[in-house]
Length: 209
Image (cartoon, rainbow, N blue to C red; front, side, top):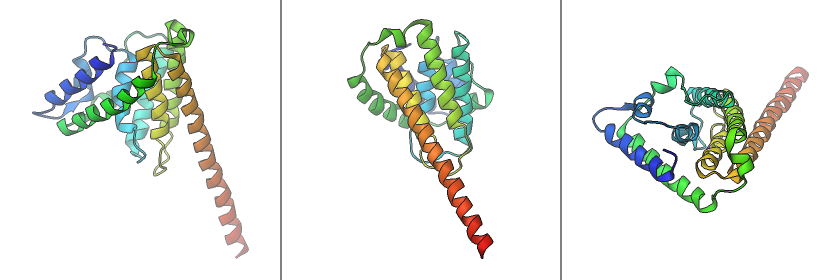
């Protein structure tokens, strides 16, 4: 259940099952025999790959990715998601949208991805690195920024590239995931600094007045 073709086929199956009634994330994942962390994360991260903030849903998603990252770091073989994430419902239209996004994004990534740098991607070391990426990206995503653009998109990219790296045994994708983590930290830091700086200026202005 690791290949790109299996992933797309699985998403199509989810859309078919959602024809009669909305399909929850838990019900969808229950249909999988064995699904690795990357397979589950790539399904969950697709809704976050947009610049528009998703409010509390982003925070909830961040907690879920952080939880999966911690489990992967600890060496848990079977990922376990929080109940609130498992209870989220997607209708047929949403699942088909996820299929479309999955095909477009992963199709592009597969053109540049191939097995390489096995010391990064394979074995227990690869699991620990992947766990750290998920934990860090989930923690950043869970910060409640409200209406800040890209607050779910940037850490979502880190998660996506880790997933590609794990599915394709590509250590370079792991390094790109770290790049997006760094970009996310810089972006959030600049936002906090600007908020503090202009806040200080505003307070000083009103004190003078």
